[in-house]
Length: 321
Image (cartoon, rainbow, N blue to C red):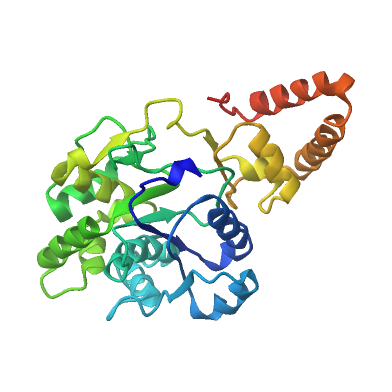
């Protein structure tokens, strides 16, 4: 457990919609297993609370998504979108981002780790370096509307040549609170999410006009650039894939997860929107079973190397670090 030595205190926040209930249970178990968080906050509709009770975790805290704000909820977003573009389909997508920001007001730890509900960790991950700087897992995304909205709401432009968007983000609680205070000040008499929604261009709001990761990351870089750094060394870099559903369907078995760990992955995202091929998934599961059978026969272990090579090539998986 040396990874956790002298880490700052942090909580974990997982925002769960109805489509992610089952996989979120697996995520929470794995998060509990590999990460040393004080509390695990699950933000979801109150009607889903009881579905997580079988996990029986003492540090699991449930937050009603429709009571986190005083004057704002899911319906508020849906009504706004219908009034502006006559389409409320993206309400949940925007709402969950606002929830992951607003929860900073009730977090007691110095930091909180936002973790996607469809992303399963497979091994311990360190989130701070030896100087307690937050380690950032960068990506190459560059969606222009995110930064147009950012400039409108905070007066900040894109200042780095990479993206802060990932499947997780270690947030400094007080800094997120500071950003929300600035947003609330700019919003004047409005609840701050309305201010963001109103500053998303009409042409962009029906799809993706705001990113909480890019917004907070840019604010972090502008106000406290020495508090984080990019992952650079082999011990810090993360091997990940978003193709989990294509490999083993949207709800992997424990054997599937064990195999993905063998592939050298730190975490895998299982997206429900991907175009899945049931025949390929069934064939993959047969090969995974075969892999573990071959492990017991030393003379045939060379076949396992071929299975691993084939998976990496087929799904563009990174080589182990």
